[in-house]
Length: 112
Length: 115
Image (cartoon, rainbow over all chains, first blue to last red; front, top):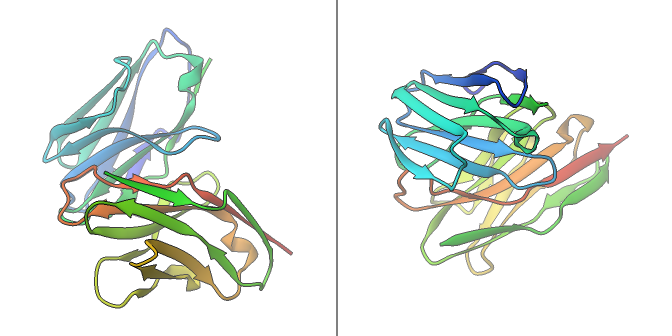
Protein backbone atom coordinates (compact mmCIF):
# COMPACT_ATOMS: atom_id res chain seq x y z
CA UNK A 1 0.00 0.00 0.00
CA UNK A 2 1.46 3.33 -1.07
CA UNK A 3 -1.19 5.56 0.48
CA UNK A 4 -2.64 6.51 -2.90
CA UNK A 5 -6.08 5.10 -3.64
CA UNK A 6 -7.96 4.96 -6.91
CA UNK A 7 -11.61 4.21 -7.65
CA UNK A 8 -13.03 2.38 -9.40
CA UNK A 9 -10.47 -0.39 -9.94
CA UNK A 10 -12.24 -1.60 -13.05
CA UNK A 11 -14.51 0.29 -15.45
CA UNK A 12 -16.26 -0.77 -18.62
CA UNK A 13 -17.94 1.97 -20.61
CA UNK A 14 -19.45 2.59 -23.99
CA UNK A 15 -18.18 5.26 -26.33
CA UNK A 16 -21.08 7.58 -25.53
CA UNK A 17 -20.84 7.30 -21.75
CA UNK A 18 -19.47 9.85 -19.31
CA UNK A 19 -17.55 8.59 -16.31
CA UNK A 20 -14.96 9.83 -13.83
CA UNK A 21 -11.90 8.28 -12.25
CA UNK A 22 -10.96 9.33 -8.74
CA UNK A 23 -7.61 9.46 -6.99
CA UNK A 24 -6.98 10.32 -3.37
CA UNK A 25 -3.92 10.71 -1.16
CA UNK A 26 -3.47 11.91 2.39
CA UNK A 27 0.32 11.83 2.38
CA UNK A 28 0.71 15.58 2.38
CA UNK A 29 2.08 15.52 -1.16
CA UNK A 30 1.73 18.65 -3.24
CA UNK A 31 1.84 17.17 -6.75
CA UNK A 32 -0.45 14.66 -8.43
CA UNK A 33 -0.26 12.92 -11.80
CA UNK A 34 -2.29 10.91 -14.28
CA UNK A 35 -0.53 8.29 -16.41
CA UNK A 36 -1.82 5.99 -19.13
CA UNK A 37 -0.32 2.51 -19.38
CA UNK A 38 -1.24 0.54 -22.48
CA UNK A 39 -0.09 -2.95 -23.35
CA UNK A 40 3.26 -3.02 -25.15
CA UNK A 41 3.69 0.76 -24.79
CA UNK A 42 5.77 2.94 -22.46
CA UNK A 43 4.21 4.71 -19.54
CA UNK A 44 2.58 7.94 -20.82
CA UNK A 45 2.38 11.01 -18.60
CA UNK A 46 -0.96 12.70 -19.21
CA UNK A 47 -1.38 15.48 -16.65
CA UNK A 48 0.50 16.95 -13.71
CA UNK A 49 -0.92 19.16 -11.01
CA UNK A 50 1.38 20.99 -8.62
CA UNK A 51 -0.20 22.90 -5.76
CA UNK A 52 -3.56 22.36 -7.47
CA UNK A 53 -2.48 24.06 -10.68
CA UNK A 54 -2.07 22.11 -13.90
CA UNK A 55 1.56 22.29 -14.93
CA UNK A 56 1.71 19.63 -17.60
CA UNK A 57 -0.67 18.55 -20.32
CA UNK A 58 1.04 16.27 -22.77
CA UNK A 59 -1.13 16.73 -25.85
CA UNK A 60 -3.93 14.68 -24.37
CA UNK A 61 -7.20 14.62 -26.34
CA UNK A 62 -9.96 16.82 -24.94
CA UNK A 63 -12.13 13.79 -24.24
CA UNK A 64 -9.96 13.46 -21.11
CA UNK A 65 -10.54 16.29 -18.64
CA UNK A 66 -8.65 16.45 -15.34
CA UNK A 67 -9.77 18.20 -12.19
CA UNK A 68 -7.86 18.85 -8.99
CA UNK A 69 -10.19 20.46 -6.41
CA UNK A 70 -7.61 20.26 -3.61
CA UNK A 71 -4.18 18.82 -2.94
CA UNK A 72 -5.58 15.47 -1.82
CA UNK A 73 -7.94 14.68 -4.69
CA UNK A 74 -7.55 14.29 -8.43
CA UNK A 75 -10.20 13.34 -10.96
CA UNK A 76 -10.10 12.31 -14.59
CA UNK A 77 -13.39 12.96 -16.37
CA UNK A 78 -14.02 10.81 -19.42
CA UNK A 79 -16.46 11.38 -22.27
CA UNK A 80 -16.93 10.01 -25.77
CA UNK A 81 -13.91 7.75 -25.46
CA UNK A 82 -12.57 5.50 -28.19
CA UNK A 83 -11.68 1.80 -27.96
CA UNK A 84 -7.98 2.71 -28.18
CA UNK A 85 -8.37 4.55 -24.88
CA UNK A 86 -8.68 1.18 -23.14
CA UNK A 87 -5.73 0.98 -20.76
CA UNK A 88 -4.62 1.05 -17.14
CA UNK A 89 -4.88 4.59 -15.78
CA UNK A 90 -2.47 5.25 -12.95
CA UNK A 91 -2.54 8.09 -10.49
CA UNK A 92 0.56 9.13 -8.56
CA UNK A 93 1.56 11.79 -6.08
CA UNK A 94 4.89 13.19 -4.96
CA UNK A 95 6.31 15.38 -2.20
CA UNK A 96 8.23 18.51 -3.18
CA UNK A 97 11.84 18.22 -4.28
CA UNK A 98 12.77 14.86 -5.73
CA UNK A 99 9.75 13.88 -7.81
CA UNK A 100 9.68 10.52 -6.03
CA UNK A 101 6.31 9.18 -7.08
CA UNK A 102 3.84 7.11 -5.12
CA UNK A 103 1.42 5.27 -7.38
CA UNK A 104 -2.10 4.07 -6.84
CA UNK A 105 -3.20 0.61 -7.96
CA UNK A 106 -4.74 1.93 -11.17
CA UNK A 107 -8.11 1.79 -12.87
CA UNK A 108 -8.43 -0.80 -15.64
CA UNK A 109 -10.59 0.93 -18.26
CA UNK A 110 -12.25 -0.91 -21.13
CA UNK A 111 -14.05 1.09 -23.81
CA UNK A 112 -16.49 -0.91 -25.90
CA UNK B 1 16.21 16.98 -21.54
CA UNK B 2 16.88 13.45 -20.38
CA UNK B 3 16.32 9.93 -21.61
CA UNK B 4 16.33 6.47 -20.09
CA UNK B 5 17.20 3.23 -21.84
CA UNK B 6 16.45 -0.12 -20.29
CA UNK B 7 18.63 -2.42 -22.28
CA UNK B 8 16.61 -5.62 -21.89
CA UNK B 9 12.88 -5.78 -22.48
CA UNK B 10 12.63 -9.29 -21.04
CA UNK B 11 14.86 -11.16 -18.59
CA UNK B 12 14.05 -14.80 -17.80
CA UNK B 13 15.96 -16.39 -14.92
CA UNK B 14 15.66 -19.45 -12.75
CA UNK B 15 14.76 -19.22 -9.09
CA UNK B 16 17.71 -18.55 -6.76
CA UNK B 17 19.88 -17.30 -9.64
CA UNK B 18 21.35 -13.78 -9.58
CA UNK B 19 19.88 -11.12 -11.84
CA UNK B 20 20.90 -7.74 -13.22
CA UNK B 21 18.50 -5.37 -14.94
CA UNK B 22 20.34 -2.72 -16.89
CA UNK B 23 19.51 0.97 -17.09
CA UNK B 24 21.43 3.71 -18.88
CA UNK B 25 20.46 7.33 -18.92
CA UNK B 26 21.46 10.58 -20.54
CA UNK B 27 20.94 14.04 -19.14
CA UNK B 28 22.43 17.50 -19.51
CA UNK B 29 21.96 18.12 -15.76
CA UNK B 30 22.50 16.11 -12.60
CA UNK B 31 19.71 13.70 -11.82
CA UNK B 32 18.12 11.61 -9.15
CA UNK B 33 17.64 7.94 -10.12
CA UNK B 34 14.85 5.52 -9.29
CA UNK B 35 13.76 1.94 -9.79
CA UNK B 36 10.08 1.08 -9.56
CA UNK B 37 8.46 -2.36 -9.62
CA UNK B 38 5.00 -3.22 -10.94
CA UNK B 39 3.47 -6.54 -9.96
CA UNK B 40 0.65 -7.91 -12.14
CA UNK B 41 -2.57 -5.89 -11.91
CA UNK B 42 -1.03 -3.33 -9.58
CA UNK B 43 0.44 0.17 -9.73
CA UNK B 44 4.14 0.98 -9.63
CA UNK B 45 5.93 0.81 -6.29
CA UNK B 46 9.21 2.51 -5.42
CA UNK B 47 11.97 -0.10 -5.09
CA UNK B 48 14.90 2.20 -4.38
CA UNK B 49 16.30 5.60 -5.22
CA UNK B 50 19.63 7.36 -5.46
CA UNK B 51 19.65 10.98 -4.35
CA UNK B 52 23.24 11.49 -3.17
CA UNK B 53 26.00 9.91 -1.11
CA UNK B 54 27.02 6.26 -1.44
CA UNK B 55 26.67 5.04 -5.00
CA UNK B 56 25.41 1.64 -3.83
CA UNK B 57 21.78 1.88 -2.87
CA UNK B 58 19.83 -0.82 -1.10
CA UNK B 59 16.10 -1.16 -1.60
CA UNK B 60 13.24 -3.37 -0.58
CA UNK B 61 13.02 -7.13 -1.20
CA UNK B 62 16.80 -7.58 -1.32
CA UNK B 63 17.39 -5.46 -4.40
CA UNK B 64 20.26 -3.03 -4.78
CA UNK B 65 21.50 -0.70 -7.49
CA UNK B 66 24.76 1.03 -8.21
CA UNK B 67 25.03 4.51 -9.62
CA UNK B 68 27.92 4.84 -12.07
CA UNK B 69 28.29 8.45 -13.11
CA UNK B 70 31.04 7.88 -15.68
CA UNK B 71 29.01 5.20 -17.45
CA UNK B 72 25.70 6.96 -16.79
CA UNK B 73 24.23 3.72 -15.58
CA UNK B 74 22.04 2.60 -12.69
CA UNK B 75 21.81 -1.18 -12.92
CA UNK B 76 19.55 -3.12 -10.57
CA UNK B 77 20.77 -6.36 -9.01
CA UNK B 78 19.63 -9.15 -6.75
CA UNK B 79 21.91 -12.05 -5.74
CA UNK B 80 19.15 -14.65 -5.54
CA UNK B 81 15.67 -14.17 -7.01
CA UNK B 82 12.38 -15.68 -5.94
CA UNK B 83 9.29 -16.58 -7.94
CA UNK B 84 7.58 -13.62 -6.28
CA UNK B 85 10.05 -11.22 -7.95
CA UNK B 86 8.32 -11.83 -11.29
CA UNK B 87 7.19 -8.34 -12.29
CA UNK B 88 7.82 -5.36 -14.54
CA UNK B 89 10.70 -3.10 -13.49
CA UNK B 90 11.01 0.55 -14.48
CA UNK B 91 14.06 2.80 -14.26
CA UNK B 92 13.43 6.55 -13.98
CA UNK B 93 15.43 9.77 -13.69
CA UNK B 94 14.50 13.19 -12.38
CA UNK B 95 16.57 16.41 -12.53
CA UNK B 96 17.91 17.87 -9.30
CA UNK B 97 15.63 20.34 -7.53
CA UNK B 98 12.92 19.51 -9.96
CA UNK B 99 9.44 20.81 -10.23
CA UNK B 100 6.77 18.16 -10.41
CA UNK B 101 6.34 16.11 -13.56
CA UNK B 102 9.92 16.11 -14.75
CA UNK B 103 10.67 12.41 -14.30
CA UNK B 104 11.46 10.31 -17.33
CA UNK B 105 10.69 6.58 -17.25
CA UNK B 106 12.26 3.76 -19.22
CA UNK B 107 10.14 1.35 -21.22
CA UNK B 108 10.35 -1.34 -18.57
CA UNK B 109 11.98 -4.77 -18.19
CA UNK B 110 9.86 -7.84 -17.60
CA UNK B 111 11.56 -10.15 -15.13
CA UNK B 112 10.25 -13.72 -15.21
CA UNK B 113 11.51 -16.08 -12.52
CA UNK B 114 11.09 -19.76 -13.37
CA UNK B 115 11.05 -22.61 -10.86
